Length: 408
Ligand code: HEC
Image (cartoon, rainbow, N blue to C red; front, side, top):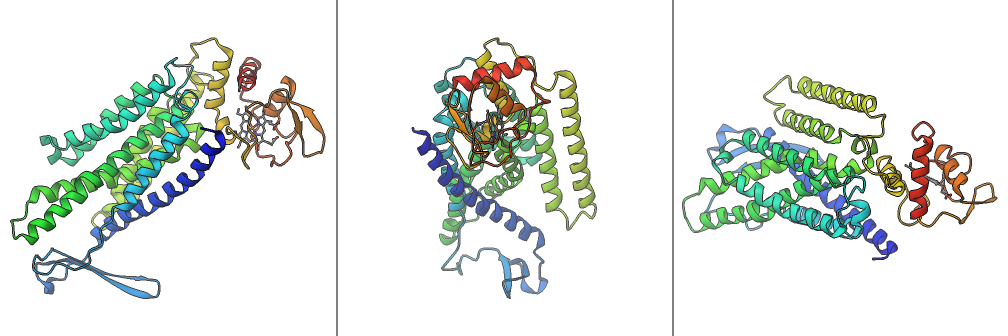
C-alpha cells in the first residue's frame, strides 16, 4: 500500500473510530449513571423499577425504568449496538491499514527479535480471536458467579500475555495490542451475548414462556465487564501519545498500576450514592497510582541509564531504530511529510530549505544538529516544535540514530 493511501485511511478511519467510540462509551457511562440514580416510587407498584427527571436542552426529560410487560411491549424500542460495531470495525481497518501493512517497523522491536513481519501479524490477529474465546469460556465456568474472581483471572491472564508479547513486540504496540484485545472482547460481548440475549428475553416474553434468569444474568455480567474495561481501554488506545510511559523499561508494571487505579476510580464513581467516602478513595487511588508510576520511572532511570534494558544486539541500524522508537520520534515523523513534522524517509543527502531562506545539505552534521539542537535550523513550513535531545543521547547513540535515519 502506498504511504499516501495509508495516511488517507488513517485519517478517515481514525476519525470514525474515535467518534463511534465516544458514542459507545458515552452510552455505557450514561446508562450506568442512570442505573445508580433511579429512585423508586412506591406508589407505582412492582413493575416500576425507578424513575428520574433530567434537565437538558430547555426541557425536562422524564425517564422511567420498568419491568418489561409482555402484554404491553412498546412498538418502538431503541437498541444500542451500531456504536459498538462501528468502533470495532473501524478499529480493525486501522489495525490492518496502518499497522499490519508495516509489521516490521510498527509491531516488532528489532532489538528483541528477528521474527518475520507476517508472523507478528498472525500472532496479533489470532490473539484478538483467542482473547474472546478465552474470556467467553471463562464466563461459562462456575467462576462466573463471582465478578471479582472473573476480573482478577482476566487481569492475570492478560499480564502473562503482555509479558510474553513483550519478548518480540515493540512496547508501543504491546499497549495497543492489549487495548485491541479488550476492545474486541467488549464488542463481541455486545454482538454475541448482550444483543442476542435481549432478543431471547423479548421472544420468551412474547411467547408467554417463563423468564430465563440466566440469560439476563449473562447479559448483565457482560455489560458490567464492558463497563469496567472502558477506562483502561481508553488509556491503552491513547498510550501511543505517551512515549514516556510505553518507552519505560517498566512499562508493563506502569500499565498494570494505571489500569487497576482506573477500575477502582470507575467503581467509586458508580457507588457514590451509597458510599460517602467515594471521592477520598478515588483521589487516594489517583495520588497513590501517580506516586507508583513516578516511583517506577525513578527506579528505571537509575538502574538502566534512562535508555531501557541493555541492548543485546550490535547492528547500529537496529540500535538506532530502537532509540528512534523508544524516544517517540515516529510520533511526529511519519512515512510522509505531515503538518506536524517532515518525514525523515530518504532525507539523507538531500537539500533542505530552512525558514531563513537558506538551503543546507542534510549530511551527518546537519542531522546531529537537528536532533540535539532543533532550534538552530528550522525546516521551512514547520514550527520549531521539536524537543531538544541534547541531554538524552550520547555520541554513540547519535551515531546509531543517524545510521537508522540513513537507512530509511
Ligand atoms: C513533537 C514532535 C517531534 C518529535 C517527538 C521529534 N521531532 Fe524531529 N522535528 C519535528 C519538527 C516539527 C521538525 C521540523 C522543524 C525543525 O526543523 O525543527 C523536526 C525536524 C527534524 C529533523 C530535521 C528534518 C529536516 O527537515 O531537515 C530531524 C533529523 C529530526 N527532526 C529528527 C528527530 C529525531 C531523531 C527524533 C527522536 C529522537 C525527533 N526528531 C523527534 C518534530 C518532532
